Structure formats: C-alpha cells, structure tokens
Amino acid sequence: MAPTTLTALALTCSLKPSPEPSSADKLARQVLDELAAHGVTGDLIRVVDHDVRPGVQKDMGEGDEWPMIRERVLAADILVLATPTWVGHPSSVAQRVMERLDAELSETDDEGRLLTYGKVAVVAVVGNEDGAHKIIADCFQALNDVGFTIPASGGTYWNNEAMNPKDYIELEQTPDPVASTNKKLASNAAHLARLLKQDRYPPVQ
Image (cartoon, rainbow, N blue to C red; front, side, top):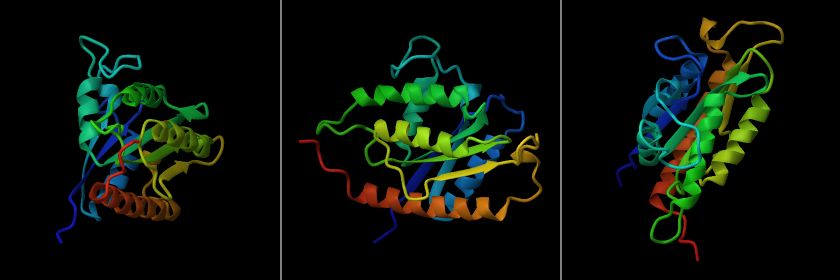
C-alpha cells in the first residue's frame, strides 16, 4: 500500500514582519525540514505579515485575512505553531492565533466531529529568557481544546542562558539537544498524522 501523503503548515508568530530575520521562523523551518524526511510537504506563514483581526469568529469581516490562513490550516494534516518568548509568555500574535482558532469549536462535520479532529499540532518556542515549558503547556492546552491531537514529544524549544540577549538565529550551529528533539517531534507527528488520516476518530454519538 502506498504511503499516505501528508502536509504541514507552520504558523510563525514572530513580532517581526518579513523580511526581517526571525528565530521563530528558523526553528519552524527546521521542524518542517525534519517532517520532510518523513514524506511531509510543508509550508510556512508568518502571521504578522497578514491583517489578522482580534476576535473569536472564523471571519471578522472586511479586510480580515484570517479566513485565508484558516483555510490553509484546515487543509493541512499537521500544524506547527512557532512563537518567541515575550516576558515569559507566547507572543501576542500567537495568542491571537489561538483566540481565532476558538471559532473551530462551533464548526463540525455532518457526524458531529470538529473539523480539526484528526489533525496533529506541535509547538516550537524560542527565546533568550525562560518560559518555554509553560508556553508549550499553554499552547498544547489551547490547541487540544479546539480539536487538535498532540503527539508524544510534540514540543521543541531553545532558551538562551539567563541575562544573555543572543538570539537563536545568531547560532552558527543548532545545539544537539534541539536537533534531536526536532527529529523526535517530526517522527512522532508524522506517524500520528498518518494513523489519524487512515483511521478517523469515530463520530460523536
């Protein structure tokens, strides 16, 4: 039997618009590269480049670019949510993405399943301050609440040592622990997404 084709979409939540270099972009692209090794085709959107309006509806009206991003999220099998750390929390852009995903709680198929059921989500965090574990936990909870499935080892991160302003994009080499975590994350995410695509969650009774 031919392997199941999978796709991934990375939403990077840097506060920096393109083309400014972004550590969140760098880590997200590394995750996409690892997913590619498992036959997953990936793409990336830097959310701050788009007019994503505040709110919890799937479409907040004229000029709102979230519907376009949402369409691509729902078309992908794996979502990579990448965020920098700001004062110990995910960026405001990441928070807005999670708020907009709240609309998925009202969207179901003909059998009562959320449209996000069967889709896998992973989280990538970068920062030159502490907070990655808490950010990953908060993002996992939000993503799971709206229907995404979280794989084992589904979070990857890099934090610099305290009081040192160096950024991830400035590193000449990816630290071994980050590289190995990226590999585990990609392997588990691709495996889980393939299983869920072949055998969907049962209808809600």
